[in-house]
Length: 257
Image 1 (cartoon, rainbow, N blue to C red):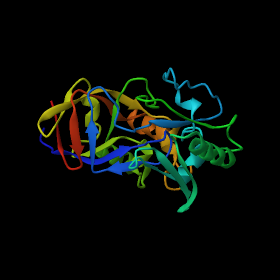
Image 2 (image 1 turned 90 degrees about the horizontal axis):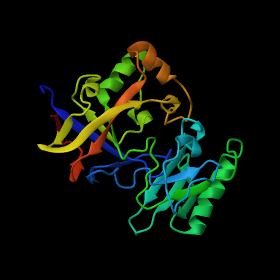
Image 3 (image 1 turned 135 degrees about the horizontal axis):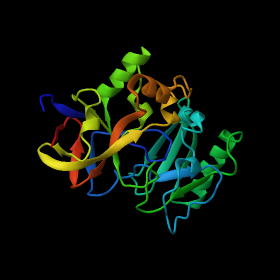
């Protein structure tokens, strides 16, 4: 390709629906999601997830931005440096809850805070859930999501104001491709610094979650409707499967093969 496509950001979302954590480098393993990406979730009152026999459940089972925009007002950070997953929740820069999710007491602290914070929205008591090797992604397959920043800029052009790419909650941000070029990459391999690392699987169909401003927790645009009216689709981004083990680093070049 004529354009030089580069990795601009590497993101994971340790708790489904909660804050991004950015990385300069991240390990990719064949056939897997990114490490710790959506490894935890908070059930929205249903208490149906079985950690002993984990299975895919639809996003509506959990707290997430499509249904509960107010969680965007919370800042979360997962610290695993000491060997256990310690989640800190802050609001307006002040810590409001902190718990080790590997312990019943730590999970209860987070659950009690979420129950109070979302008492008017939840249909029952929230429950922090996790299962080793399971990821609470929006689709059953073990995909990694990729966002073309040039496509986001096209949407910005239509709406006439800036759009935070984090609305789309993608794992990898790339730049240097033409707008919407990624939709022509289906079934193709993506080579990172010369080695094949991904195979593009499908386009990402977008829901109301992208209408929530991650900075203000407000639904300030109807982006799925904008996509459909301006571009005749409501897709933005692509899912890819990892076909090799690799270390990804911000700034690496991607070539479509």
